[in-house]
Structures are given as structure tokens and as C-alpha cells.
Length: 304
Image 1 (tube, rainbow, N blue to C red):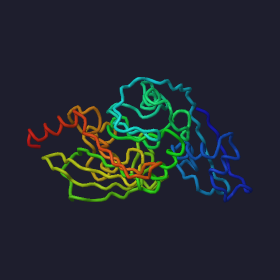
Image 2 (image 1 turned 180 degrees about the horizontal axis):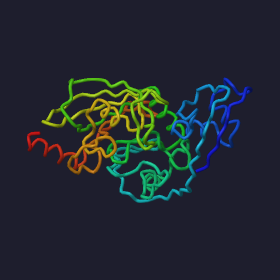
Image 3 (image 1 turned 60 degrees about the vertical axis):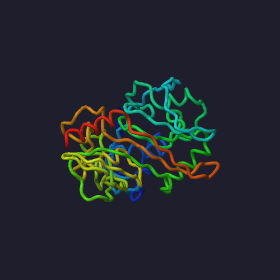
Image 4 (image 1 turned 90 degrees about the vertical axis):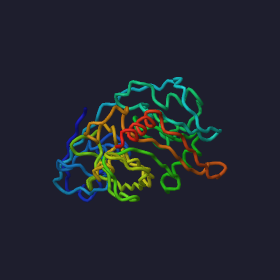
């Protein structure tokens, strides 16, 4: 990891930190902003935001992680295709599959499966994330839409931004959830103690809104439907931990003993979008995986 240190001089005072560092370092502004969001840039020993204006004497430390060389290769992953045409493809991602490669990724990813299946994907998100408009966590199963061309990608991204694309999830959480219907509106940022985790915080955070509805209560668990208004990393998992009802089987946020559910009990079961070309509203659904069904059946049988 390469490190840079700066002390802000008089002539640079009142400049946005991302602009200041773009002028000082051989990186684009978007790269600087990404490093800030990931917690790799500290202002006076604290994480900061891209629009923070620096002052005379401020100390800035920049850690730049080493980039890994990653080559994408089409892989036959026998993907479950829910819908496909010349513009979009909707898949039911299984538990345990990573959406796109990143640092340390060794197993084949959904992107490589998509490249094998259809070969034509949009290039807006770069060489490592072709076609990817939104993500779901590795151990979360369910629906994900990818774009086959740049016009489709732009349309789907705009729908996410304007909240006209709707994503609904089913999940099992610890404890008996009250009330029946509620909204969690709490900003999410990177955990200052563990960069691989997120947390509800006001520090370098983005707004995050999750709506939920109780479907069934057991003795020690609750079956819940979620709808995302925003799409932050680990959003449902972090929000449910925040209200003290973490996801069953969540290895990062639950910290409780549960049966082996192969990761968090969370499934993206419904996706509604407007088709980029036809402008038709389309809704897709998919059933929960077998591990989800057997866990619910066991909770019912035990009377939990």
C-alpha cells in the first residue's frame, strides 16, 4: 500500500478535499472520491467527506491500496435466467455467488457467467463490471437485472436514482419484530473499526431508507418482507442490526448462534422496472431457495 501525506498551505485553504487531492496526486477525482468513501483518506486522523473544505494546517493522509490484476473469463455457471431480451437480462443469483470480481476474489463471479451466456453487456461500469447496474451480497440470493447495452444501462441507473425501480426482499431476523409495518431511515457509512463492514453513522455516510412488513412471527424469529428505497451496501442487514433484529445466519452482523443457513436468510424475490426500450412496466418474481424453505419449515415445526 502506498501512502501520501500533506499539510494544507494558505493558498489551498477553503478548497474541497477531493479537488485538493486531485491536483496533488496522479489520480482522477472519481478515484479520490472512491478512496474517501472507503475510508482510505484521513483528515486530521478522521474519516471525511469529498465536499469537506480544508483549512490551513490540516493534515491529510492518503493510503492507496495496491491494485490487483484481474482478467475476466467467460464461465459456464448454469445461470437461472428469469427473463432476457436484446436490452436486459434478469437472473436469479444463488447464495454464495459474488456479483463481480474484486480484490481477493478467486471463484467465478456472476459477471463471468453472464459473459458466457450472452457476451454482449454494457461497458459503462468498466471492464470488471460489464452490465452490472446494481448488486446483491454474496450470500443473499435472488433477482438482479443486468444491461446488455449502454442505453439500457443508463435507463436502469436512472430508475435506481429516481427510485422508480422497486426491489423487494424476504428475510428471517432474530427476535419478535414490532410493529407490523415500519420504515427505518438511518444513514449508513463504513464502520470506522472494520472497513469490511458498514454501520449506521453520521460520519461519511449516505442516506438509507428501508421499509418492512412482518409476515409471520415465531417464538424467537420473525419472517419479514423488505422494500428498499435506497441501495446502500449491506443496507437491510445493517438496518436490522441497528434495530436489534439482525438477519438470521448473518456472519458479519448477527453475532448469534443460529443453524447453518449458508449465510444470511435474505432473498431478493421481486423486482419491478420500466423496460428501457418499450417503456413497459415489468415485474419479476422468484421463489426462495431450498435452504430458506427448510429453515422456515423447521421454525414452524419447532413452534419457534
